[in-house]
Image (cartoon, rainbow, N blue to C red; front, top):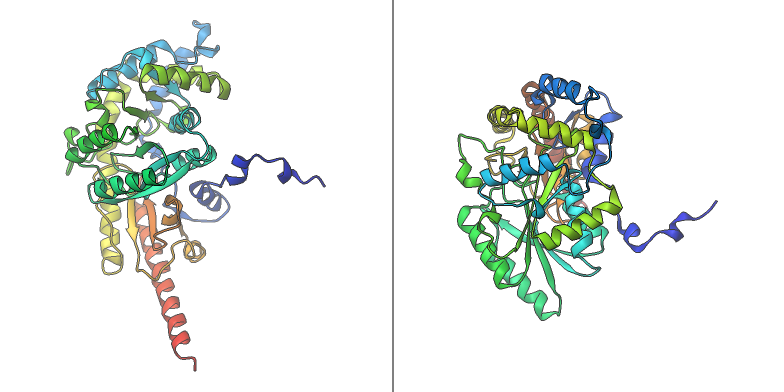
Length: 419
């Protein structure tokens, strides 16, 4: 048989399977597994009726362009709608500074391929979104993590890390952050820190990549629209590359997202996209545009906030009831995720087989680190399961964790009893 590994590029040799996708395959192959692994929107929130009406109108055949190739930059009316969304968020964004992408993941891939050479340094939050780590890793960038505080990335550690790398002769190209309800921790970067991050990036001549898919999903019991003000609002010199998406607010199956960046960079992103897929699906873009034009998106947002806030509450109440004395977590003020810290002796990745035996699954925290730190952490997503399944899933998780702790105690006792 041919040894195909000998033909792989150096980049391909470094590729790793997504831990989140791997957990999805576990659920698909097992019976009655409650999954807290993927950050999927709740399908019961999708505006099915409106989508059917939009699709029927678009597929009437009156406009042949609906199923035709289109411009790489994006469907022009959709670009206008996105500019309106950006304006509502406080960002003036002409069409030449926008590019429609096939999901935010493509946006991250374009940023990585256009801006990073092998060995270039990218700073990321610890923990950080696995999809971004994959995109940076695939172009053989050097990824360096910076710890977070309760209000986001530690600025002192950030500057110390940059200074150390500079002394080593390394050039830091960019800092990647998810400021609103970060994936995986759910943390929210405070407003003063956002401004200081922008000042730091300008002072150190570093680009700032602001990934903002959860901005609209703030929980109104603890967060206001002012708290989720994008960093890019205050960008005066083209320092910030901003990514956002319709996946969390309309439906991820349409794969419609966007990049907002200085025009010279967007031109290069567009060229790179031409080599990837020519354009984001024309029908998908038209559906999303019509959802914006007909007010579907605007009507969805308060419903989504209420829906996910309730699920957050259900998960926190269940964790408090089952595991309050054993685990801890920062209370998420929006988004899809809750970040759980277990007793220090517990390895969340090693516990996965036991969790599956109990009928529950999650993503082990080490998947979100660049150097396999924090083995005693896990990400729980409360977005997709029903409230009833959340309660049952937490009960199963608690049983699995208690069993794992008991096994750890037995092993420790056996080790200390040896002569």
